Length: 135
Length: 136
Image (cartoon, each protein chain N blue to C red):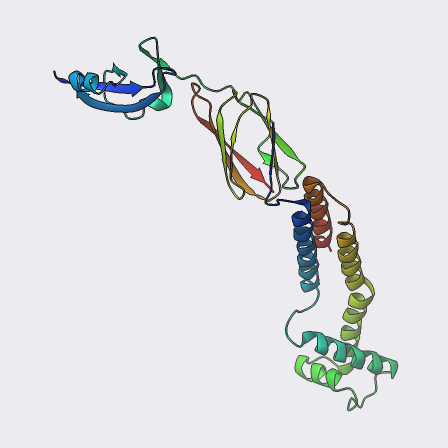
């Protein structure tokens, strides 16, 4: 069989895990859950996922941010709203950490000044990030 | 959910950090007014004493008994009186106003850490004291 452009995805969630070019016999033989696409694009997983056998755009997360400048005094805080439960939240900066969102607003305080980048992975929403400045 | 990004595992850790921050801020404040160098404190003390004695003696023309005044006047081109007045003025300011203000703020700031148990409140408190010292 001729090679096809395809994406391999998680059957339960539709999350694209791999993009490539291969023949369908090989893909079937290895039990891959895949969808043929028009062109090879390794970045498809960033903006699309698979739903009902079709590529569907990943929606933009309706994230709300109370402010991006905050005092590094352990009391002043930034509130991030709209993060779905189960989303992975990783924070890079002087005090890095990883959290799993519980579906409520995320309230952050900072004890050390610096620039903090909050990376949010709220599948099926697109990944997003917010840069905060604590001083 | 609240996430407090802090390097402190316990309130005691935060208090220890706070004491260091306050001491460091007091040190920076001092450095804005006096030179911090080996032997400088001894030099300040000696020349301030000389200046006070010289002024009290009515600015005698013979500066033999006032080596610090004589040397500073010789090297700066100031008159002995001007040199002595300057030394005394700066010394008085440090001894009577700036130094006590810094030390009072430093000691009170550290005293105020006692009994605090909330890390966020400790950090906020210390930032306030450091800000006050930075403003001196």
